[in-house]
Image: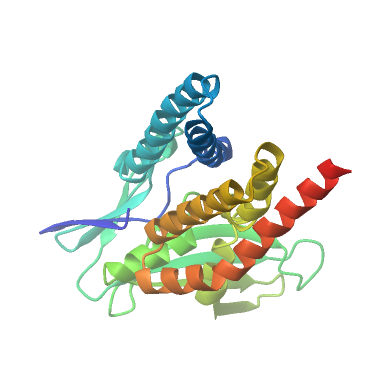
Length: 291
């Protein structure tokens, strides 16, 4: 969800809908089991095993709709404006509209003037915590509308749902300037301001959920190789499972990246490491089971 532009009305999301980690794990698990089930189905068809046919077909019939439903639910959540905090621009004014979850705990929409050429400023105010000059106390994190003449209007003093990376990317697409300012007010009257936009955007990409997805995707060749080697003992079928797993990774990468070119470059450079990880885990499992 980037923005909604309908003439005089424009909406820009500054947060993302919550997607619990168990849901991501379930999608990954179902996808990998489906790949294995497809391999077993091919094996049963080639070898004419009448016992495996009904079991595997039932498993495939159950898993594929489940994966599709989970995926569709995630797509719907990503396009539900009621689940995110967003900015609404209309007739020279800007409104900060909280998500349904935040409205339920008392947050309301806030408005400010926003003439053409205005920008947004996310201020992070810090102070001293244990000793003078340690900058250890987080005092306030607020969002301000900044007019071209320098006048500033506070939209909210504590913006809990704002995600710097999401806000920066979506506001850039909407043609709205955005920066993060860190403000330090010391005990002895010091006042220091610093532009930390790049630093905060980089830090926002290292969220626990994103790290979980990165770890799962990065190690998928290893645990898919372990599963394939544990249940399949034919080199050809194992290689087919590895190819299917890599294809699924490619599809996810192409769908999740905004730049198709960067995705293809990333996929091409990942082929050697994926193949090596898959082969290593397969050989290791077969060696252990031989012993």
